[in-house]
Image (cartoon, rainbow, N blue to C red; front, side, top):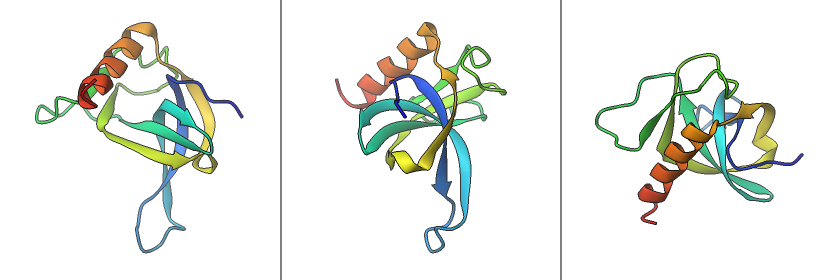
Length: 110
């Protein structure tokens, strides 16, 4: 498979550190491709937290392939193995791409 920055996929995350056989699928944004790993930003359907300036609302969530109003959690970016990723949902629209990656650059001090 090929992955592009700004695409939205579903990825499997372990829900218990002691038992890695239990997992949850959640939407993510591809932030960087370093095969066999990906840097991804987790997405939640919760509103942005006022206490975290790195929570960015996804304005055009439907056009991006998401069902619910969603928030990109920039401060929760993680590195995962491509084996955790399946089921492409869509891609960020330019407005959201610019907002999210601008905030990511700020978070990283760029």
